Length: 90
Image (cartoon, rainbow, N blue to C red):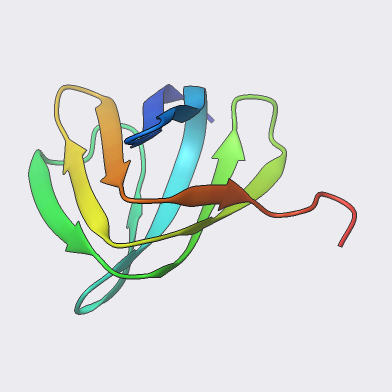
């Protein structure tokens, strides 16, 4: 599967900045997914979990606060007030 650039940014700095194959985020009207070649969009996100599949095919999960998700030109950006990666062993 092809990948695209993705960042999770908080006021403290970048929590994730690498290529991904897919992202599922908690929108205020329900969860949504983003794959390569997604149409441009801006969406408000809710508190919840962002689940992504990184460029190596590994699933990663982040607990995030409210924010804004932007997709444009095969690049996605999630601006949130907080984000913490879930323990990979749980």
